[in-house]
Length: 138
Image (spheres, rainbow, N blue to C red):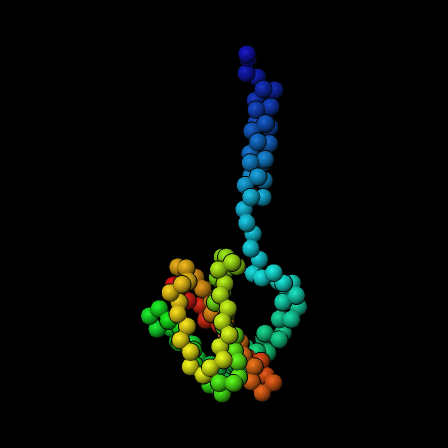
């Protein structure tokens, strides 16, 4: 068999097609996690989060990380509930949510996987929403 321009072009074309088929197959098999299931609905209501952050700047709660525990101090009565979401950016299935209905709380972080985490604390006091977040590595 003689190698000429036609054979070379055909080999390049066939190898390109095989490469593209392999890339499409790999991309389809890869799991894609959005930030949340209701991502677009949350984006529309983003102004509420901005207002909550503004309120939190005036009267913040405190989150303190000690060794392998998360210590939360909520500066308001215990009957005011709060929600803590430990958010894992790379895997939505690893997210953990806590209902914090007490003034001082210790939340163990031993069960969390190693990696980047975002602690998102939200609460409501006197009809105002508050929100605070803190990034940490475990």
